[in-house]
Image (tube, rainbow, N blue to C red):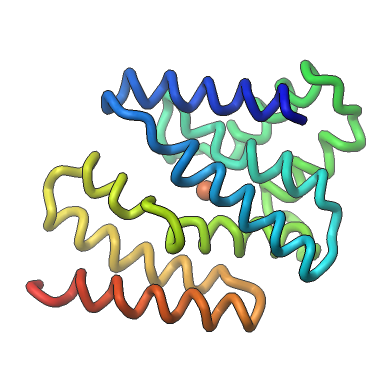
Length: 177
Ligand SMILES: [Fe+2]
């Protein structure tokens, strides 16, 4: 798993340096989703190994191609990487299912919740602002993102936690609108 993690980090860091000249996506998003999903697995159960791999790979499809079709690409690239690092087909399938959010499993809920929490608890919004440069564009993106993220959180405690953070961000984003 550590070798897989290292490769994913290198890929994101390299892509960031080419795209915007600073590394942020792995540290501020992927690693945060990894950390949050670990905590959620401890609290609610679920297959922690599968969730960790899914957290590391869930956005790998963004690299070089952007958002459109990124889930499908994440699944395809994820499978290849898991194969390369010695994870069997059954494991690969489980990871793919979670990334695709196909089933309403505990693991899928954990990844979706961690993904949304990752945006709120890290410097994700700041990274996005730095890349967007246009603050009006960032404001609209941010307000939509907040609503979207809050809808994805599947557990009550985390919903409360997220709502508190979102409230502050929403106020800031709306203040001078
Ligand atoms: Fe994500």
